[in-house]
Image 1 (cartoon, chains in turn brown, purple):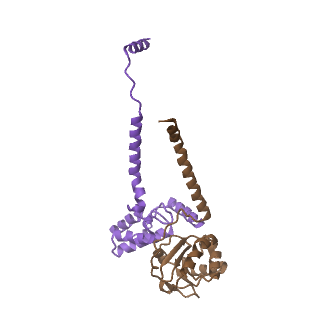
Image 2 (cartoon, rainbow over the protein chains, first blue to last red):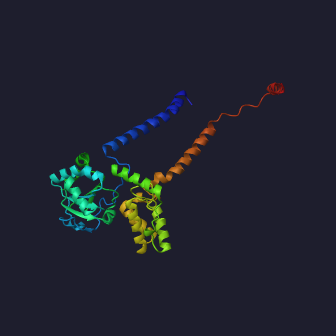
Image 3 (tube, rainbow over the protein chains, first blue to last red):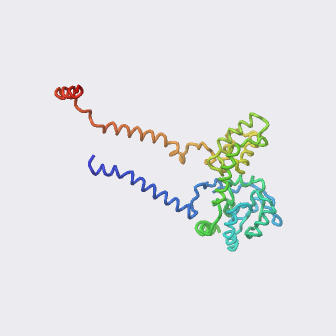
Length: 182
Length: 149
């Protein structure tokens, strides 16, 4: 081994550590921005038709089935007991202001509690259905609330966000997608 | 993801208290119940991600346990139950992921590590300096003297 080779050999571990450190730093940064969630799962519904369902409404809203939803639209699973749902409420209200139809599904919630939640945080929904047993949610592949799905004109799911929507996510991902679907 | 954190804590506390074995959840048919439990142990709870559906006390896990049992009673095979879950939650729901393009690195890692180890040993052996020449007569004598004193 020439001295140069030897030096390269000794420095190699530091190089590996530096690259690993940089990658870790990028990852932490994306977690802080909210664009990466280590617990996040890809949705199996993307590119597929909505699962079939028919749910009762939260009075006075009518219930709805998968066939009632006219895309492009959002489907938002929420619950009164869910903290990120409170946090995403302003983003949903802003979407409603823009004229985006949002179909709400209350997940494992009591009707009274849902109504109170909507009174306190605003009601951004076109219609609100109740999924008290949570079976429709499982057919969607839901693993927490809130979750938001985008359905296009032909009833195909195009996007899913697990967790609360923020202005950043709306601006970076949702808005461009919704514009492309009109 | 505060919700995730809270549910995660909930999972931890819950498992500390009891392993899930609520008699009300069990199937009356012993063989079917055993099949359901075996299946539940192969499926990941999507909330407490390192626990199986059978071990977790999360709400979603309880629902999934219920569905496994419903499907078994309806006559589904083990394969069909797993496929039902994979269709909704993807391969991630299986605690033992299938071998495919995505998981090749995962399944191949032990083999790669073994090869790397063998290569390291071979390189180290080749680099070992040749054994020193045997002692000359004069050196042998000197050694004997030193050992005697």
